[in-house]
Image 1 (cartoon, rainbow, N blue to C red):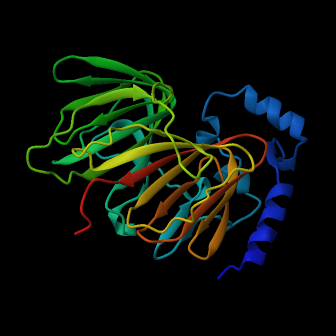
Image 2 (cartoon, one colour):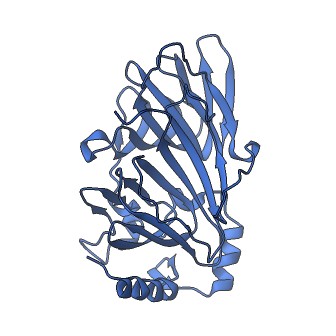
Length: 301
């Protein structure tokens, strides 16, 4: 168990450890260089180029920040394992959250190469994709296609025939779950991007919130984009029945899960079971942005 004193220690350590990677390995870098480097990189570049990746930890054998517990998990880049995705071509995937962990959904990263194509989800399973690198073409059986670039996304209803194709390379975060159907309600394909979604009111909170899917009853989950400026934090220490799957797209901070406090940064993935206490504070000199899965609109029974 971690006490508040451990949290203060983590804050002190995290503020001191600003790491960057040189040809020799991990070294300290002046803040001005860190900022100018970040400004020159594409959006969400640290998701696929994390500070602490497997190649950067060769001098620390056995080290990982990943943690798996009964009610939460932190899956960090150095422990993500990629292998061919079933029925996808020229694509490697890393399953990060699955029902084996205790979730009611699947979350994985898909790295598509040149001339790659997606496979279909299982029967009665809905799919959500969010592009974090490159571009893909989404097409349906009617021949209608959409180009999805970084920060674009698509929701595909269950049993909706579609394909994703990539001519060069791309990285996607994908959520899938077996649709919890309601009589007389159906979902529809959605294609959009984060910047097209309005900022929503967050009473009692100071972070910025966008919801990427409709809040109406047909949809049994939503995807939130949440932005924190350095020093901002959640006011509510949440404990609720909803499950979460989270990908840190930008920034760094401290995440409380249960009685533990974890330093986190872009590229980290978190699973939160129902009723696990959860809280976040943003640190560093740039904003935190994370993408958050949340199941909604269904009776827990």
